[in-house]
Image 1 (cartoon, rainbow, N blue to C red):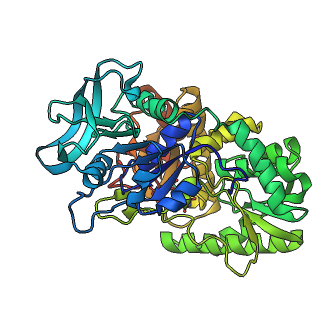
Image 2: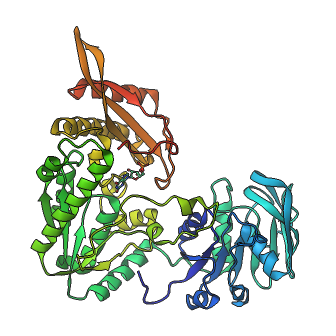
Image 3: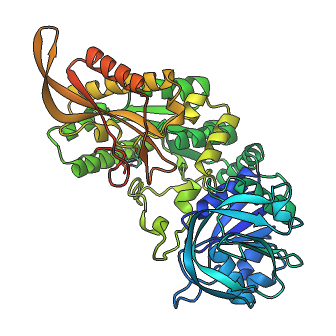
Length: 518
Ligand code: XMP
């Protein structure tokens, strides 16, 4: 998204902290737009954005390392407030005449902060002693010129330093993480109190701007969008439809690997309620015939990916005349990760959804969610009138039930996993846990075992229940579902799903496990 008028914004320079995106989200929660840029972005480029403030993120490096990531030093002359977090404090010291040394003790984890100078605008309205979260080895031993001490911890006399005239503030702790309970207020004090930002970034404002922007980009041309029923493509569809109405055609491919009622729900919501032009491609037979006899997970994925492109391409030819292809790309897919050793975000790159559609499909791209985080996409979806069930649904993988049905895919096995999955969704919703959980689903394992039902011996399939909590799918922890719920799930699945006689619960986190079983 390129804005016509530059929004009021805070620029975050990324020095490789695993929390950089969290800082960006916290600022947006204050209804202020934020942009993440590489640490070495030239000061002129930053100035061109006319930021109200700059935040220097933390990072795993030491300023004195040979390959330390350093910013353009002209940023300190822009006359813009700067908040240095953790490594950001070292940068103040490095460029503005202070001193950093290896700390005797690595300060890691909870710390108690004592605010000595209550006049510092960052702590307005906050108590004089606060719990904070530290994660640093090096520490400041001499303040940079013009700075004075605002707060200290047991381990650091310079936990917070400030140059009030230049509006530079350094924090040795991380205000963005949940373990700093007043962190949100500290960030709000920076963006509103120090930088003077209003509350201009709301999804209502964004919606108006985005509609104008899409109209300007697309003109009278036609746009095609692959609708999966997931949150991102659904919100993109509703937004584009608001902007250009019948110039949008959505293509929904049924690959035979969908959940129960998925195809009906999508047709109901988008076709009948929203009156979006929808091409429904039922290609389930094609997919399943090509997957016959295939057991290797990678081959399954490849077949599904290739078949999808084929079906989608032929549908676009049928629709004809479209110049644009819309995609639900989000901001985290766009941010360039900083290649610094020790930055986990740089190493873990999503292996999913890479590649996309082949280049021969010469479409121009429309990506109206390109500057939004997931929670903002959800808020935008509600603003557009999408139902709660679509906006807050759990993520569902592109290859669908293929990654939840191990071994060869057959219609019978898919029916089993589909039926078990419906029970999991139903019971999670009834327990009030579905929308609080990142993902919860059933997996059909390639294991048969002995059981007894009534007076009869059985030799049937095994369903595994998986429930995980996660922020972004990169790491995950298994959810401690209540025993009563587990009992209900096992009873219902074994009683109601024909062909299943055993239910197990997966208690593996990621890493070392993955969320899907493949
Ligand atoms: P894993 O299994 O790698 O999954 O821990 C992480 C997240 O990605 C989803 N996932 C996929 N999403 N296409 C997708 O669109 C895929 O091929 C795919 N494989 C896994 C998974 O559901 C989880 O949210």
